[in-house]
Length: 224
Image (cartoon, rainbow, N blue to C red):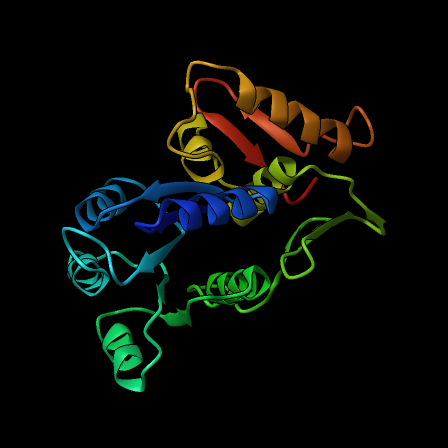
């Protein structure tokens, strides 16, 4: 899943980005309101972490403008203001949740997981495709009865493929959701990670779980 962190305090933004990357999320950073607005309008983010006190354009204005333009991803407001009226303003501007600084990173992760589970068409923290099962809350994946040993990036890639099971996903789509804005599209990194997953998912030569669609991309088959 790809997250935009809109936070003007560099140390906080870098800390959150490092933590999210360790958990398998792709993350970009914006330090100003206008930059956050531009990145959110131009990229397919799954969630926005939005500080209220951004320079150039505050978080409330960014949130309102994004909602008015049709931005549908969950927005989690981050702010040092803890008065009820401040929280009401944030929620009324279009935010889905509100987290007061300072916060524990574990709570931030829990809020993110809850917001992503609440997205349309998702009613469970468990995703399935054939005999593949992904527990988003526990951050674990299973193949049949056995747990899969996956790196953070392998887990993110598998999650994206399972969310789009039986649909063709292009390399560009994968790059946009699994990697961040600095991803070099000229490399073969995606192909390498696809092969890593194939070795762990395809237990026999005849079991082609992840299929290559020449000239288009990949498809994870749920009926193999």
